[in-house]
Image 1: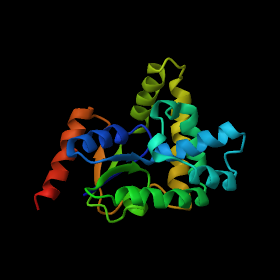
Image 2: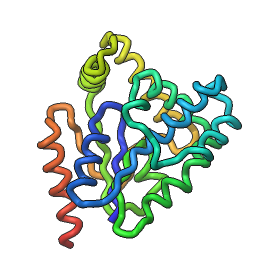
Image 3: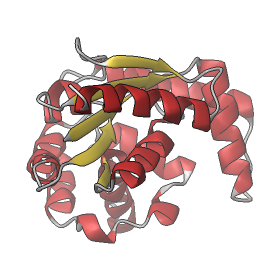
Image 4: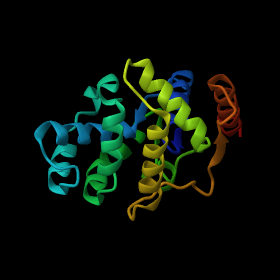
Length: 208
């Protein structure tokens, strides 16, 4: 069973994906961490974020089992990752790794921007997780501040708007809702309510 979750930043899809993976006892892959890993490698090596060849080399050297969520979850790396993610050659370099992860015995939960539409169009259950921009900005601001970092909500909102535009307007596998995906708007939902709704949908699929 493959469960795919797509949606914009700070919509809650990553938290939901981790909960679903734990609930069903299957591995989870946050594909955003792959692009964050590539972005972090480019920054560390002094390469420009639009250096496609360097990005491909960084993608090829990436170890999926060694991605440090805490280190890669800073707002700055997230912003850099959204710039790296528009590079077609980098996306292609990471595609096989994502599909291999999805095809392992027992299935997987995978979240990102193009999982249900491009990476795993054959996924058994697909979700498009979203929330309005103002709520996402509040969530991301709280997240940044919880790490002891400075954040201004107006700046965070602008960053999210730019990332949304890059993700939705890129030529290669843009972010969009798959035709057969379940829309889950978390604007007014806490994680427990969102989780229960998602589990209900997955269980209905499993009981067919």
